[in-house]
Image (cartoon, rainbow, N blue to C red):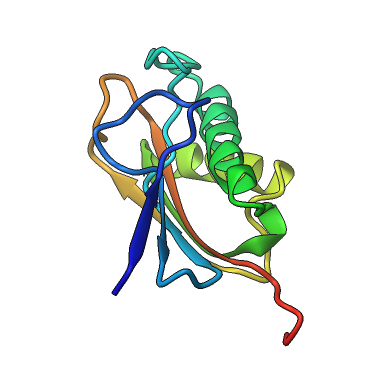
Length: 134
């Protein structure tokens, strides 16, 4: 099975791929988009809306480099540190930013902590390009 591991140069340099394309098909599996700037610094402090905005911007950068956009997302997984009001605030922001909607499969999970100090949100997606055969 051929896999292409891709990390956009506009984002912080991770120790993993930002997105993987399998067998040259038009299906993409992302790593978790996090609220870090290009230098790897956390964006948004303790504000879930600001962190959500940056994580979405980073995910959109990853998607755009593959010719994808929000409407190509078919599965969304969101991990959030916080209580139910924090989860609700983040979900509302995801909807406002257009990456979450009522037509995709979605999972929203509350977790104890995430990989970076102070990180409150992480977003993963599976995206698929429309083809002429669709």
